[in-house]
Image (tube, rainbow, N blue to C red):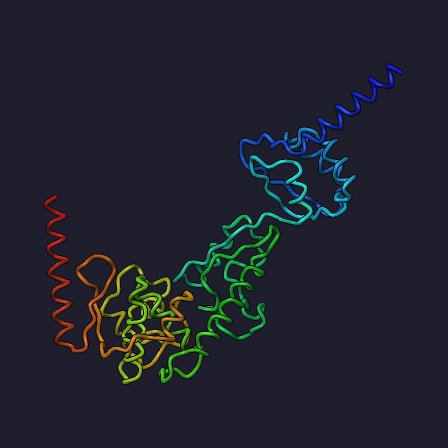
Length: 336
């Protein structure tokens, strides 16, 4: 009788300690990542985590998962355990399929090639496209379309095993929706024929200023130029047309060399966007600030802002002021 009582006491103690272990934080010095492969038994998963020092009492964890009928509900995928997590919390995470999400950020103003290069460098994304991604838009269901400008700058979240094409599909769908919304709600009377021209103009505005408070005014200036038949004379379009030949400086010869993207030699807009425009820039271009300014130059504030002018005389004065400021600044730097 005494022996049976001892056995019962030991069993009760084991159950108590096992149950207690489910709510004791796992002793992790740093987050731990692991994968649950489809078809893996819960016992095998527990054994694997125990061998990594993650689960201190795998038997209790397995018994609890089976007793609560949760073991079969564990979802496959990649997970990350944060320090302080308990085995019970981890099981809930596995059952709910709270898999680890990776991220990829498309930066405002990137060209498509910049984006493709960043995709290739991201080890969390499965590469399926070539270096230049030929026929990219055909793979996205739009054969013949130029990919420049067709992806919305944003941070995209995805599960492990996601391909570069799947990420781009998300980014393109986001751009299509943003552009459609902006075109539908645009300011009446814009000198633009369709949403494609809105996207082209937005890409130019994107490359001209990074200050949110100036976006609407720069958009208004370029749209005003377009409306009165004035050439856009946008340096970023010339730079885009130069391609790999651009070395950081625009020369007089570059401004005179006629290409489809030289808005100094051609009236109207270039044939395609020149960069990936953000949602904020697309919206600012669809709702531009009304202005009679047709010229602008960098201000002397050094904060990236500009001086806008409605007359050539005022513009020349602003340019002269900027040049004088830059010369004084250069002279001061030399003295130092």
